[in-house]
Image (tube, rainbow, N blue to C red; front, side, top):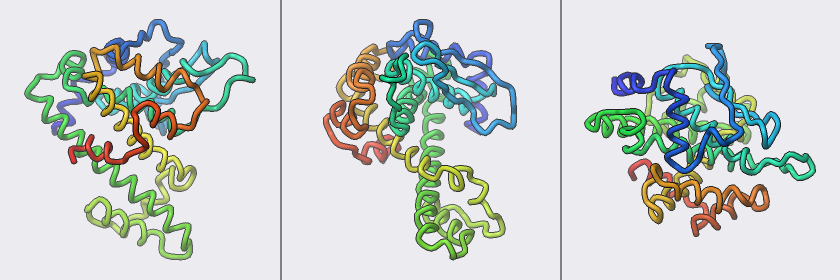
Length: 275
């Protein structure tokens, strides 16, 4: 019910404004960036939003599936973060244009979309009532917790299935699902074969949880030393000086340590979930 109420604050016709104002609040100007958002209306699209470097660094496109609600905006902001990173590191000449690490790109998307966790952003940009913001943020934490537990269940499923592919994979899936989520099993349903990442790109699941941890560690560092994430141009300064300007020179693990002063630390993901 809380999520349904919250969706009314994020109508489709306002989402571009949310993105523009959100970037402005952290020190970037969408009008000065080569990022173009194109809306599509297909309801059967697998993705909600997707970033494409058409002609870097001059033309970065985001295909956005039009839909009302928070989930659609969050996906759009996530892909805006990936596009932002591409706009800063992409080179026009292919000779100098090295492929960016996918995990790091995803982490940049998670950092930009993290502004939706900020109470000031929800109040100033989405115009949520102060009394509703705390309820909404708690609901988002609970949803994220379930999503991460499902990710862990799926990652362990991939590992166990590769060790012994002859076992009953449906039984294995539901055993791990119940173990990690605490939710009931439905062995009459064969779910694992309908999850695209499990059958086509299993490493994407690992990248997702690593990217979430990178983002949590980065956001924790920025908010600890520079203040709030939004309405703060230190956010863009940190990202440009510590992450963007090095391009693909360093591995993501080294970039993270150089930027935050510590190695990859999953404790920051726990902290972001209230643990």
